Length: 116
Image (cartoon, rainbow, N blue to C red; front, side, top):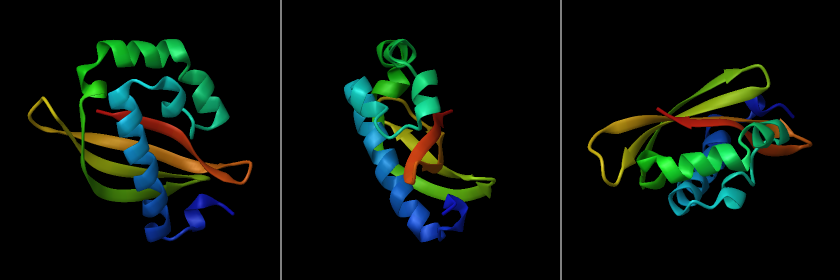
């Protein structure tokens, strides 16, 4: 099944669980846990050096609020992009969180994740 065939509600349940897990692992600086749901290609790109640098040098990546708002889903090709309004525990303001999901070997995986 292609992930774009899932309902918005099904995608949101899956995406929210992935997003909560990414926030928790990012705040704790746990690389192995952070990448556990990444697609194999995305995990290779986000290697331990890249993610370790992010954890060590980014106040944003280490102080994400557990409070976020779902904004919507965009479907294209074999992937969906789920957008969130993300807050921070130490900085004022809001950020956009982006999570790209698809299937790899029959399992839902993260193909992209960012906050900007």
